[in-house]
Length: 447
Ligand code: ASP
Image 1 (cartoon, rainbow, N blue to C red):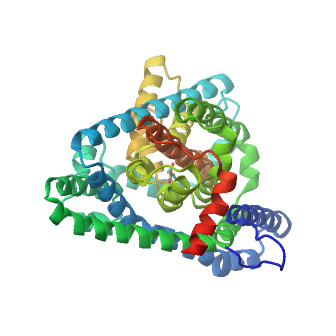
Image 2 (image 1 turned 135 degrees about the horizontal axis):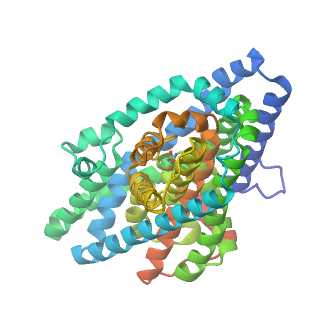
Image 3 (image 1 turned 180 degrees about the horizontal axis):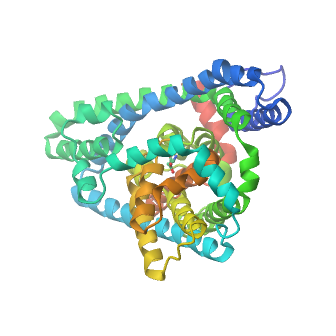
C-alpha cells in the first residue's frame, strides 16, 4: 500500500489512513452541519458526492460476502474432515454467542435501571418526536408485521433454494447450505472432493484479492460515509435524548473495553491492548458502515492476518457471528425497551425484564447485519412486554449513531469468539499486530 509515498518516507499503514479518513469525515461533516446548517449546498454534496462514494465502497464489500461466506464455510467444514469436530466447534461457538450476548443485555438493563433516562424526558419532546418520525415508524412497523418470529424463524433457516438465498442475501440460509455442502464433501472419496475443494479455495483467494482492492478505497469510503451521516445529523436531538444516548454508549463501552478485554486475556491469551490495535480497521469499518455483513470480509482478512486465527476457524465462526452474534444490538434493544417503558410510565416487573433479556438475545440472533436491521425486531420485543411499538419514533432520530456504535461492538464480539475458538482448538494466535501488517504487506508485495 505504498501509494502517495514521499521519497524516503515510510508509507502510512492502511489502518492509519482509514483512521484519518474517519476523523477527516467526522470533522468536515460536523463542521458542515454546525456552520452551514440546512444550506442546500450541503445536501447537494452529500447526495452527489459523498453518498455515491460511500455506496461504492459499501457495495464493493457487500459484493464479496456471498461467495466468500459460501466458499470459506464449505471449505472450512470440509477441511475439518470430521462431523464430530464440527459439532464440537459449533456447540462451543453457539454457547459462547449466547453467554456473551446475555451478559451484554444484563449490563444494559442494569445501567438503564440505575440511570432511568426515560423518566426525565419532557412531555413536549416526546410528543414532538412521535410526530416527526411518524412516517418512518409506520414503515418499520410494517416490516415488523412481516417478520416471522418463533418457530417460523427456525424453519426459515433452511432455504428452499440456495441460489434464491444468495440472491436475497439471506445469510442464515447461505450458511446452512454451505455447512451441509461442506459436510457432504467429507463423505465423498478424496478423488471426488479434492477438485471441488480446490475450486472453493481458489474462489476464497480471489475474494481476498477483491477485499484488498475494496480496502484500498476504505480511507475515502469511510470518510464519505461518516461525512454523509454527520452533515445531515440532528445534533440537537443528541442533547434532548442525551441521557438515553449516554446509557447506551456507556453500556457499549463497558462491554467493548471491559468485558472483551477480560475475555481476550482469559480465553484467548491475548493482551487487550494488542488485540484492539490489531482490529482497529475492523472496528472503524463496522462503525462507518453500520453493517456486520458489509464488514465481514474485512473481519475475516484482518483476523487471519493480524491475529493469526486460522482460516478453518474464521471461515466458520465469523460468518455465523456476523448474523447470530450481536452483543451490541442486544444491549441496545434491552436499554431501549426499558427506556421507552419509562417514557410511557410502564413499570416492568422483574419477570417482564427477564422476558426482555430473553427476547433481546433471540432477536439479536435473528436481526440482519445491515443498518437498522434490528429495528423491526425491536418492535416485536416492545410489543411483547406491552410497550407501544410506535414509541420507537422517539429514538429513530439518534438511531444511526447508536447503530454505528453497536455494530462496532457486534463485530468485535465476533472476533473475540473466533479468537477464543482458535485458542480452545489448540491454535497459537499472533499477538504482535504491530509487525503483522508490514509482514503481510511484504508477503503481498513478494507475491
Ligand atoms: N447494524 C447492526 C449490524 O449490522 C444491526 C442492528 O443492530 O441494527 O450489526
